[in-house]
Length: 205
Image (cartoon, rainbow, N blue to C red; front, side):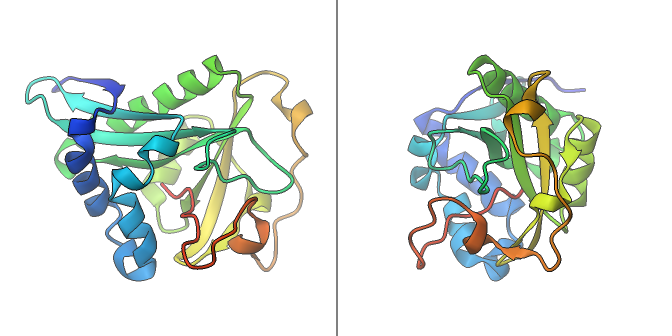
């Protein structure tokens, strides 16, 4: 199997990363056009990320995957109120020709390691209800499904997952509650949503 390595994003990677994300998130071009534009334009978010990791094919030297880590203090970290985590990741994507090689899992592992090193206790993410492949990945990696944190986004239902990074994480966050029925509209739940014309895109991977 071809090998790869993971490193921090460089300015020269922006066009390639944008193209990978534009393809991976094509479904949002009609469901949520503002999100598709945002996701595929690294200049709009790279400076606000805690870390941006890219996977590089060792043979071709090409960027073939990307993920964005957003810990507390980053404007990309969307926290549900009351806060249920102190970090998350988003914009996880791998170019189609490189899928099935464990690259997405490796990128998530780098986020987990970086978050743990930074002192985060729990990661939380949203993945859309139609992203079954991503959901299977997170479940294999030990993320807990949190239907009590699910939200309704412009593109559909966002399924929440969390991963504890320390043994006593549960002592620092509210206990899970009953699933919301109906789902809460994301604008009514997320912290620091201020611009109605450009809503912050959800963590949906």
